[in-house]
Amino acid sequence: MRKASFLVALALLVCLTFATAAPVWAHAELVESHPSGGDVLAKAPEQVRLRFDEPVKAELEPIMVYSEESERVDQGNARVSTDDPKVVSVDLKKLPDGVYGVDWTVTSEDGHVVDGALGFTVDSSRPTSESAADPEGETDEGSSLGTTLVASLAVLVICAVGLAVFVVVRRR
Image (cartoon, rainbow, N blue to C red):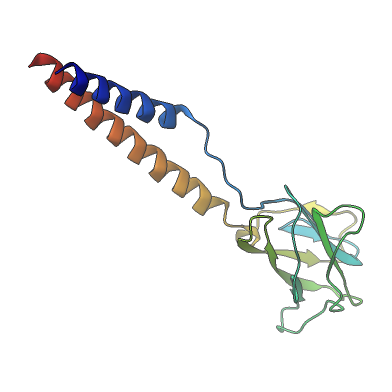
């Protein structure tokens, strides 16, 4: 009986440890971009620059920039910065006014492929740059948040079941 109580208490302790631990995600996350998703720029940028929270590998074509007509407007020279392996950039052709989409795909240090998209607008009639909400400028952060919530809920359910088993075993 004591052995069963000890094992249930140990299982409960392990569950509580996991429930209070912060999740660790090994995938690289986009932390900054120039231009930013949703920017309205008075002057066309000369390049797109993405900064991640960890060093990344950029294989094949990690950044592709498209016009409204779905034509490639980058120069096809995307690369990881030699000074900072967290930064990937690509030079752009001369951009006229219009809306542009940026698709990116990099590989995290752990080997997982991470991708996303953002958009920006060039409008030379504007005196300064503005930032606007861009629904296409989202990355997969929402899916990470959903995964975190589901995992946390699962751990809490396991803890509740463990606590119930512990109470039942203690009463016997």
